[in-house]
Image (cartoon, rainbow, N blue to C red):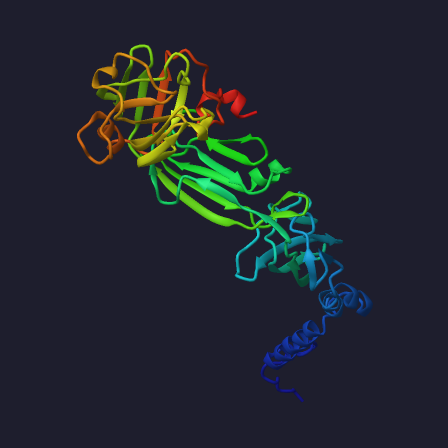
Length: 412
């Protein structure tokens, strides 16, 4: 008897119809989810699945260390803050004071250590956050806080020119410290002087309590100068710390350089490269000559009193109501109005005690005299150059007169 074939089935072969294919596919899915594949169960646990989860859940072997210890107080402002990582590399270090101001730092080449670039402020709380990664990329973090010391003895820097002022091309930045400095490098590194347009500016110490900054040549007219005094926390001498954090800016006005020829008894006023006036003067007498050199106007007084006793001349003179006086040196050199000499003196004889005198009348004011004109047209920071006097060159620290020091000596 002949058997009728069943649709979808062939004699002598296993089932390969749609149902068999579906079951086979389901088996493959179940097998794949089991993670077995062609490897043994032990190898599968070792290289995948449970093994990978084990690595991910293991703690990082990197260890972050922060000095000083958490909650430390009275911490030194220099040398105390350090962050390091063992068995890993630092990926994040942030330090902020209690006002949110960041502390910039430097990471070592191997990313194993971090230190601040500058000193910290005194009597300030800081927060440190650091993260390191080990060789497997696992992170370890640490957070601490500490407070710096409260200085018992402090100093500040008294600066010139004033913030927001407009000054002449010869004006240096001059800072006088209220305490003698025995760590000049630390103090100087905490002060920056920048110019716009840019020009190199260098500092020079006169003794241990005065630091001046200037460019190689006079400032260009219109230059904007910014001074940042980051002295808070700087140990200027053992146990004495700065307490000043201030930014000062000033502007250079037009260029004016006036040249006094003591032999010719004249002063030529040059503004922006052009002579605008020639004024007859009287300089120092043969026994009290005027210094030679480049001098900067540091103070202006419409009327003042000049007493010889204050500058080493005893009772030789005491003149009241001296008009239009502008200081050129600490030792008492001025360019000023003279109302007591005859009109014919100016341009013909040197009779002063070392100052540069211009014809004037008593009382000052805008009185139309050469002295009144020069006073009105001068800025603090303008340069007055004296030449052909039978005296020595003025010392660079006698007033704001560092221009008399060669640049290579200034930058030593």
